[in-house]
Length: 167
Image (cartoon, rainbow, N blue to C red; front, side):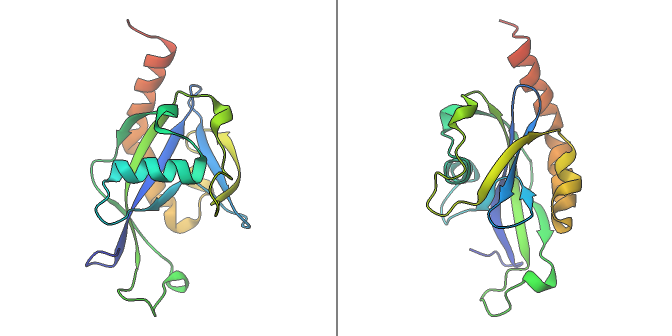
């Protein structure tokens, strides 16, 4: 599914633990790390896509996380020219993404990046909040910065509710 501008609708997933660290996945057979993300299917809402991708890529159920927030609008990135498949119709020039921040409330042992028959990740770790911006492939850095900046307040709200409950 490619929109009229050549962008594939997609969701990005930022999973945060109670220490404020982010889930960072190592791509299968690559020296590349990234957040979970995936394309939306026709007639699928962004939130439905998030929970499907969460299960496929990380092995987590909706009950393992709490939705803390999402980006208000689509964030776009363009693919480098060598990654654009010119022979596909319509041509996909990049991705437009709605990013979700999910707070990990379940057991970390539930994370299983090999749960899907075609895993995206071969390993993972918890990392400091801003590390992904510098360490993701260069053409995604601006989107990562935008998403983390927009959702940073959600992290603080999660930490306050988790570590210092008010009720």
